[in-house]
Image 1 (cartoon, protein in one colour):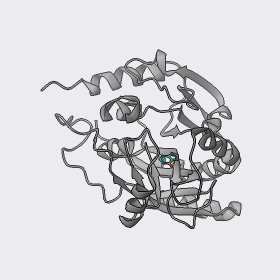
Image 2 (cartoon, rainbow, N blue to C red):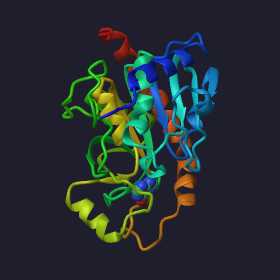
Image 3 (tube, helix red, strand yellow):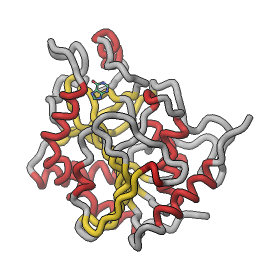
Image 4 (cartoon, rainbow, N blue to C red):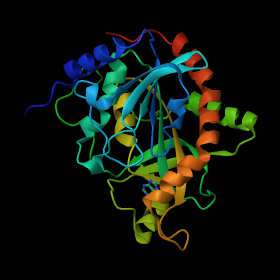
Length: 287
Ligand code: HPA
């Protein structure tokens, strides 16, 4: 069996990125559909198109700019991905998770992953922000299959703390201070690219899912494999199929992302100092 040398490739990509900027971010962000605006506001920013980064996958989805922005958010250096790749684009789970490997090689110790999702929990409304508390992987793919790269992490990584509780609590506290309602929920990841059928949504509700989407889980699995702490926030861009008596379209997903941009950016900005403090206090990773 041959597996691509993700370790060497990720090192090469990380070195390339770090050579473009004097900043040394410890926090990585992935900005999903319609949520890329946060990276436009970074200061002293260096923007690197994915096409220039060695071995980096290129996004093809609408609403994904496809660049890494390394810059400061209120003096906190971050590396923010404007756009990601998805399994439904034909990439393998390892390719989808490769940016997390690059983050690890940049010595990034915490990630904030964001996405657009369909709301299954009837309490949610279009535009709601939801902090993920757990996930259910129904994608049928996993970035850790094949030979295990011990330099990244163990063969059988634990997933009981997939979404770091102190970060979730800090986010809910920040939301409260901002006077915004932010929920916590369980995200189920499907392969896509079609939106679900109403029968599928009824099934997903029965198994305990609050939200449904087509991303994030491969990145979370790879991040946890490497001991990177994860905060994930979904924007409910639409209620899932059959919850309301209306069809779902991608334009609506992008429009809702655009509408909550302000709330979303404020929430991320408010929680960043907490995460920055935590990563500064954490012991340096091995290797
Ligand atoms: N289903 C799956 N993925 C999504 C949805 C949805 O309803 N909305 C945004 N991403």
